[in-house]
Length: 95
Image 1: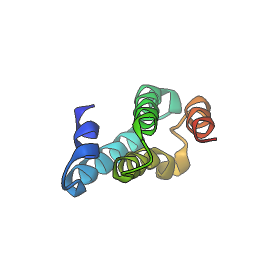
Image 2: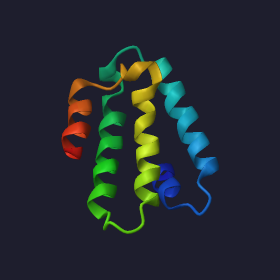
Image 3: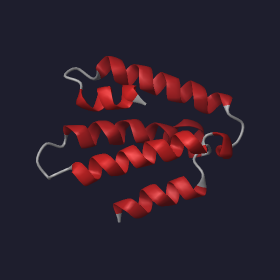
Image 4: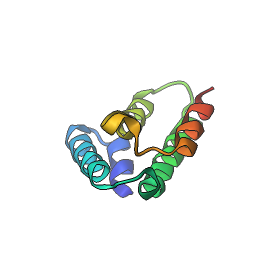
């Protein structure tokens, strides 16, 4: 998903965040079950892990941006489209 990479490194990320937020929200509202969203959820978690692994403790802007995007599926429909595996994967990574 090139748009996420662009958003993370953009000089002015406001427009790309709006597109990502609206697209993810619309998609989440259109899928019936969490297993239909699994591929995208797994992608988001992988991108999150990649940014965290690359984070050197200095500039936190990239980290903030990826967290902002990854949090969208958890906030729409009370996170019901995130599978237990995706949720555990993201939370285990943080601890």
